[in-house]
Figure 1: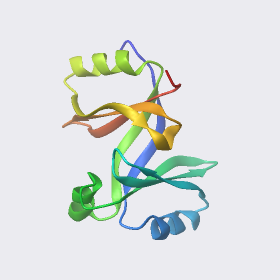
Figure 2: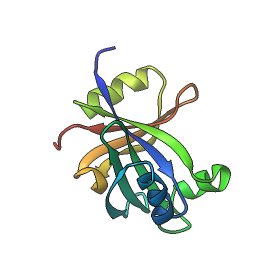
Figure 3: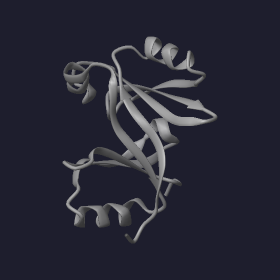
Length: 136
């Protein structure tokens, strides 16, 4: 492997950010600001805990949101794992050689400080997201 990755967050699709965030707060998570991502057509809220993984809640903003199908199929549930990388382009090239399929091309993510993200799929892994550690 010619790149390094670090765990960033678990993405959870939900019908209602308010209700789902309240459940996580009951486990000791701290809730961040909810923001609208017009590209993904979702409302996003990050939850942090000093000793547990970061969680990203994604609520569809409308019927065209890509998380609608996930929620219809699975209900509120984790559906992707995100990893932070130093060089998004190099990591993407390397993973494509390992037969990962680009599910969503690299784009700016407003909920992660304007850094680029890309979603990849591999049957043995499911959906993963890569986020660059720093803005370009």
